Image 1 (cartoon, helix red, strand yellow):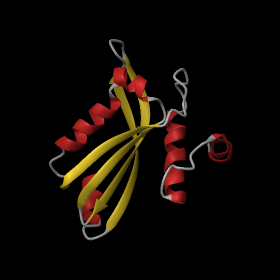
Image 2 (spheres, rainbow, N blue to C red):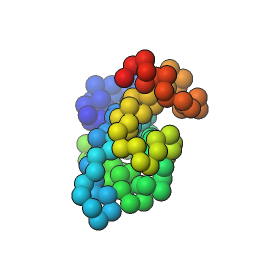
Image 3 (spheres, rainbow, N blue to C red):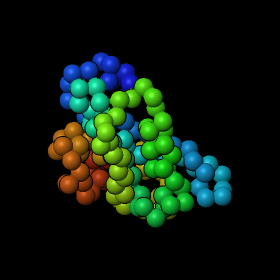
Length: 135
């Protein structure tokens, strides 16, 4: 998808928001699904930076390793043009509790909405009104 966007907007500055459904092993147990939001900034066909927005806390990802898998996929994609200073960061927002295994997709939609409305997540505090209105 990023390659298609790069080819469609080769001379523009573009912010790309992609909900990513992951399915990674959770420690030594079976695979577990989890949604995150991938935010990519692209300028003139080159990926400048990428940010993974995870609604859970970082401690859980030490076992799940979702950010590691996604970073590996992005860096291995030969069709993407990455700048020399390309960086992938992960923001663990901690809005979703450890025992809540159902709302990660809803949080990804909430984060995308906030980024579209406000250009960042500084005001992303209480997602419940968004959930009640949209999901």
